[in-house]
Image (cartoon, rainbow, N blue to C red; front, side, top):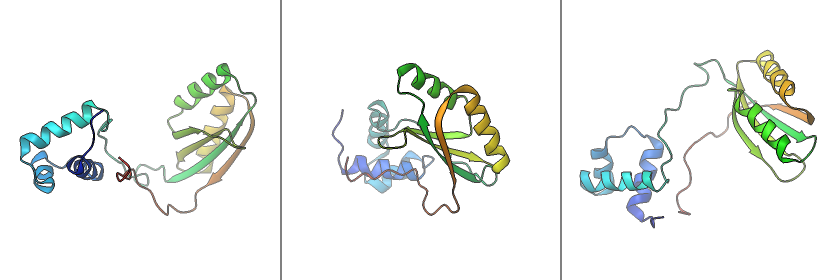
Length: 155
């Protein structure tokens, strides 16, 4: 792994805010010429600091404006159950994030859907594939903060 310097952090900050910024503009903002800046970006990609470049879409315009947090308790803690659960979650496109947790809740899912009826359909598809000890759903009332930008001061 390369050691990140201030220019690398600045490049990452610019690109995570807008991956479409032309390299020449990134270079200007960072204080480099285009070729060395491009080499740094390529190195950051090769080293895995930049995993991929994506477009963030508008959930409201795509009719998936309702966010549901789903807390799942497993029926048992075994590798085969975990594999079954992972496959079930991967097969449902409405599940946009899934985490294995410590504590009382075993897994937390973030689901995006147009409405409660659509969530009910997602729920039924999940319980069709995997047996749960408990499932609890919470509907987000307001997006108070949403970002994909990571803090870079720890890098």
